[in-house]
Length: 562
Image (tube, rainbow, N blue to C red; front, side, top):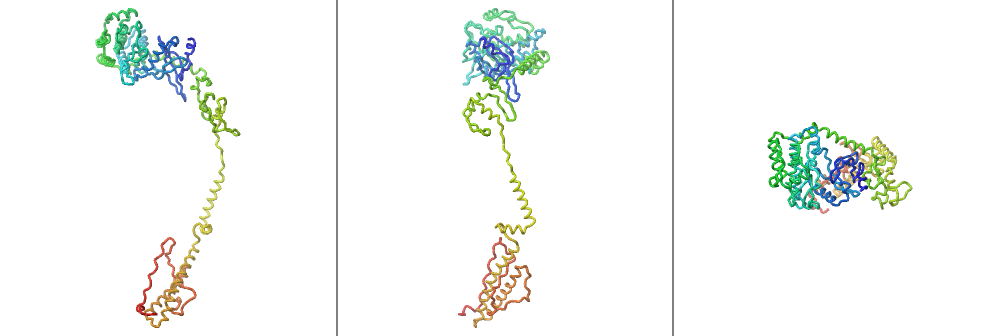
């Protein structure tokens, strides 16, 4: 027991949450303000509920605590404080809830009562209407199979209704709630659960059924307390209240209550559950209708404005307590990173070598049995063992990228630039060099000479054929004049082509009409064949022209046997 009491103090951490200061305490649990810290300065406040240290070893209270977490965590409604997490550390169970920046309805009423003032009717109706919405969501809760759980809060009171600084009401503390399947839901004989002043008659009667209408009675008691200033049995002690409830003795009538509100109270505080509102949603509609009838239509913004103007000391005191707790937490020394429990809170430092974890090597289970991929100069690869600091040293070793010289690249670029300039300045030399290495063609002069040689060879073959035809015609005695004339014309054409070929190859003008031509006849043969005229439109990339058609045979030679 003493160990548990020494654990729960400001600065202690429950899992990821750092306890700052206690903010509320009840018969079964204590609520702490806690802080969750994250990376890059992230912080968020939470409320953590823990079992009181003297009840830590009581299994009954432990089951009730776990049941509350399981049930309340299912309720998703803006008018119910959210249950976010359930944890256990060193036999300490705790529930993580959302931090509501506000005060309980009981505390607000107490501050006003010191000034002999009460809450405005519109504000009271608005807060209770919102509480009805949250309770209706709890009453309608269902299990995984869609079956209703018939959850009943059983402890509705101004102490369990929080009002935030923005005017929103939130129902809290489902610790003694009753529901199907709850292990500690049934009340034992002789045991009363809940605050005596807010108990419904069926809660103190043996064998009576407790359902959602029990919470309707409690809401009616809250309404009368806020409007009148005291509960229906506020002048009696607990024993007398239980006696009156068991004997169905009505509370005394209070004068001066507005009629729309009195109608609501009559239905809420009926001893017969069938007289009451069947659901919390029905009571919510009746409260909102009463606001309209009284001309007191109030919104959550109106509630927030009232708290800021009439109860500013509440927000100021709460801000002072929270700020002081956070300042004290910052002044405390940082947690020891070597402690196994504090590993999750070890800060991440960023330096020249990048992110460096402050976690000790013995806790770095992911490195066990791995082979280091990087090492220092002169070291050999090795397996990291738990007892060595090699893994931490490798994490801190900077990554060095070697610098390589690229002088050869600059030389290649310079040579390429020189070659390009030379080819541009001296194109003929560049052509000859390319022809020598087998790339491209030679100069234009060599191309002309090559074309002239081909033309000369073609002309020689044509001249030889013409001379043979002329000799055959002269030797034949029976050749006709037409054949002779045709042969002479062919000889003249060949001679003209032969004389024009060399001139065309050297760019000379075409021969004139006085140019010497070889005579036709048998004795006019030459040792050098006459070249064929060159086509000026010839190109390597064009198809060669079709051959000329054969010369027609002279007439009358078909019957000549020679």
